[in-house]
Amino acid sequence: MKKLGREELIDGLRELVRRAHASGVTGAKIYIVGGAALRLAYYDRPTTPDIDAKIEAFGQLKPLVEEIAAERGWYPDWLNDQAAKFLPVVGDFDIDWQPIHDDEHISVWIAPVDALLAMKLKAMEGRSGRDERDVAHLLALNGCTNAEEAETILDRFFPGDALNDRAYGVLLAIFETGLPTVPETPAHIDLH
Image 1 (cartoon, helix red, strand yellow):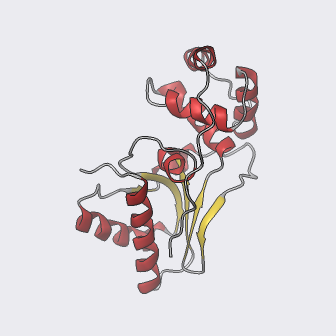
Image 2 (cartoon, one colour; image 1 turned 60 degrees about the vertical axis):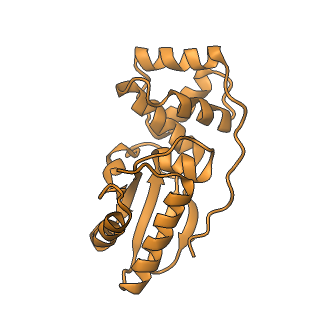
Image 3 (cartoon, rainbow, N blue to C red; image 1 turned 180 degrees about the vertical axis):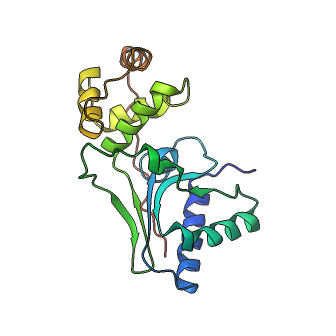
């Protein structure tokens, strides 16, 4: 199956918006996180097989998502709601979601860089070698200059959840190696 670049992600979402309108979907909300959020809104990162999101009214959208996948040869769950379980549930509920499309049928939002950093730091605790590049870019985007600043952001979204020793060691190594320059922001997304 195909991995998706930025233009394919945008085109897939644009087609989903079009089909949501045509089929009378109402009140669907997509909150994009993870690699797709980074690729769409923050920097030119490698391709991704899917869009991880928290999705409201996914039952209305799932048949449309599957149709698009079948027509394009994409993974059937190229847009999925598996990320909902990774969103903070007790911390900073004032996540400043960035809208990229919003109407009565469907709205699409992207997580801000502070929430993405917190989620990537949490993910880094359980996975090895998958998140370091994204964490380094997110540290730069958040203006972090040391591990304590990164942990402060983590604590806002996941209070009381300190990084485990392995993840903290990786975080220190990222700072030791040096952060990348702040990446150039990609062009605005239009889903019309």
